[in-house]
Length: 355
Image (cartoon, rainbow, N blue to C red; front, side):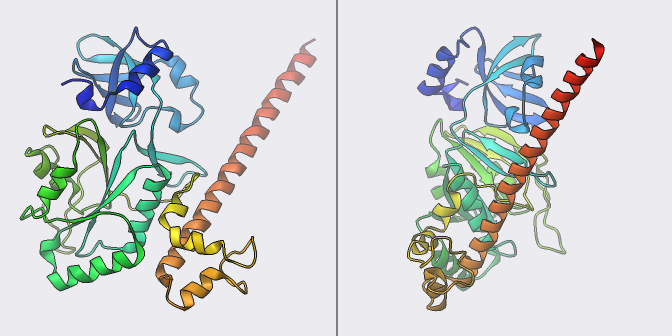
């Protein structure tokens, strides 16, 4: 196993020299377990933890390593290491942290392709596809849609699903697959390139673990039988994990996500809903909300069928989520700033009273 097999490149080597990290070994985080990390290098795998300075200087959860990160490590004992620094991230896929006010959760970093997996029997939902596309577009990660379990529906039903997708989603490749017959696997294996990283995204039970096992030709991930009540695979992946494929490419598996909250601090929504954004420039008012205004180009396009109504409603919902998240972040920053001032004033008063 070489660093190049893990995705190491000239840009990372230049960064290593610029940051004077030459005295440390290079590794990539392949899994995370409650602030302990398994780091893989060209020498082996190491159970790793952060040095104290890196831990205490972190301002938020995103300052900690995530699966996919490149790190500077020093090895000790046979299989243990300390993490001294995190390399720059060329991309990071993230969502709103579930149940946490104004915070993000990193799904994975340094990703080239996002493989969005949806089962066509019961999991299929175009709204959810647009959500995954948005988090990929926000991260500047190239999306690819994988429709699984096609052996469970009729050909006419599959054509109907493909038609629904094409009406709302443009310029994104779609591969239809069956984990049972391995139909479509030739197309999937053809996309993997050595040194490129691919992240699997999707709900529980859509067949991601079986897909990994079939692609790798090994039982790398545990799978369970179908649930008789739901006809879905029972989800067994409990943590994110990076896997190097023998035929080239690096694959990151993820636990199924029930919630895909939008943060979108860049232009992910604009890319996903490109048609809507372009039409909005023709609205009469610059601050048009596209909900009730006269001469709204988007509302007119919905009425005449130029824009799918369900896609329009999904766009509005995600736009509201984005605005709410941004206001939550601003409010959280204000609270942190006010708390910092209070501590500073408390220290001043204490010092003054002392003398």
